[in-house]
Structure formats: C-alpha cells, structure tokens
Image (cartoon, rainbow, N blue to C red; front, side, top):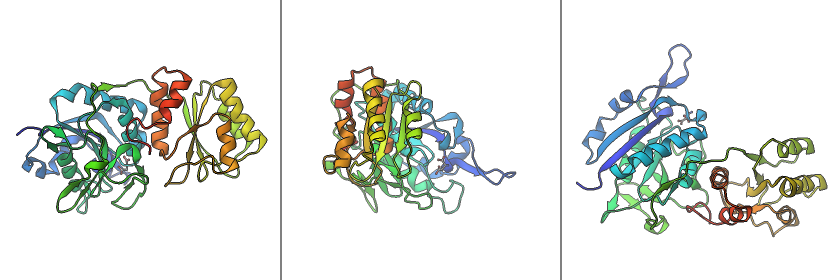
Length: 341
Ligand code: ASP
C-alpha cells in the first residue's frame, strides 16, 4: 500500500513515563516499553519504524539542540518515509512545533507532534488515541499528495497548526489551544480534514535550516517593570532581539525612560524589538492608541497575532540566516509558514 511508511520519533514526555518508586515523581522510561503498551499499532495499515532519543527527556529540559536533533532525524529519513510522528512532552511542545515549522523549509510531508497528559501505562491514559490518530494523520494522502504538509500538534481529537499553538491546560486532556487559527482537522467518528485551512504542498525543494540564534529574550511588560530591569536586559552581552509581550493591542508605557531605553537598544545596539500581545487571542493594532504608536515609532516590528512561541523561534531562525536588518524586519512581518494572519 502506498504512503504508509511512518517514522515515529520518541523524545520523552509524560506519555512514556512511570513513577520512580523512591521519589514518587514521574520519570521517562525507554521506548521499547512504550511500544509494548500499544499493540494496536500493529493492527494499523501503516508500517511504523521507530527511533528514540538516547536519553528520553521531560520536555522541560528541551533546548534548541534537541530541535536540531529532531530536524536532523527528519532530514536523514525524509526520503524514506511518508510521514513523521514525534512523541514529545506537552510542556514545551508548542515551542518545538514552532521551531520545526521554521527549520523545515518546503516541507511536503506531515510532521505530527503528540504526547499525553497521563502516561501510557495509566488505565485512563489519553496516549493511545493521540498516538493512533497521529499516525493516521501522518499517513493521510490523497492521490499521492499529503493532506497535511505541515508541522502539526495532534491532541485530544484536534489537529492544530504547530506554530499557532499554546499549551493552555495542565490538567485537561484538551491541553492545547490555537487561539488565532482554526483546527486543521477534527477527529470524531470520521477524521475530518479542513483542506481550506491547510497549507498547500510547496513547490520548492525540502531544506533544513540548522542555525538558530539563541541571544533572543522574551520580556513581559507589567505595571511594576523597572528601568533597572530593562536596562540590564538591553545590556546583556550579545543580545540580538527582544520579544516584547505588550498589553492588549500592542500597547506599552510611554514613560521617557522606557521609550528611550528601547530606542537606545534599536539605534545603538541594533537589537530587534518585536511587539506581540500578552493577550491569548487577537492581534496587535499598535496605531490604535498613543501607547502603541510610540513603541512602534522607535522601530519595533509588528508581531501581529503571533504566539510567543512562534515569535521567539521565528526570530531565532531569521537571525540564523545572516540577513540584513531590513530583510529580517520584512520577513518577520509576513507569514512564512502560516504562523500569522
Ligand atoms: N513534564 C511533561 C513534559 O513536558 C509533561 C507532559 O509530557 O505532558 O515532558
């Protein structure tokens, strides 16, 4: 049967954890044990090969080098598989999915991340449905064309665009939300794909970007933010960009010290400042209020409705490409992988 070769990559996360008898905390166990818990996979019409990180990790320990490891595994196996399923902890899954979406240029095969809120060995686990449907999605083709040529997150009956997701709940099975973009697919009695929301198969050649700039910080504005704090941030050695989580529609204080510190960062230190909102839903509209306009007047970029996860990883990716400042701004402010509206 065509289009049925799936590579499952196990990185760790609750899905493959069990209780450490000494501490009572959940720790990752190895992959062979995980597969024993899902005999159903053998009943599927897919041929599933598996590969595991040598050391499965809680995703709170994920670092950019793990994104590189994942991108590398996908690149090396790209021609031999029709789709990829990445088993990953939910805590940083939205960051990994966002990063991969930028690193994997001209992706024309499904890369579906999933995990679970309860370990696979738990009687009430949500892991089985998440894995089985993810495999189904990763192998969904029509006329030799993948239905989802994107990095997605599948969790609790919904497939979301990876770079639009946030982890929204630490206790519900429905752990992820995509506040500014509708689901790409919904699983019920049928698996329904919303084709009009899914990116088209790209024309270009698949290419993996492996250079990510790590000197990017995320700063959340709040009423008690101080000049000392902000000044320390902009004086961080080597700092390249600040993702500024502003209020509402992109608004920030207009105090002289605040604006002049950021202006100094832009003019004297060539630091890129990105304006995104700390609201979960909606976009910035910085021309609406004086408090937004002033921030943009010093040269901040318009992050529109990007999530923090997508803004951070998009900047890390663009800064890794050695582009001019003008080219970075222009690329940042338009959608590269469907990440902004
Ligand atoms: N701490 C876990 C992790 O992210 C939580 C999870 O998998 O749901 O690895």
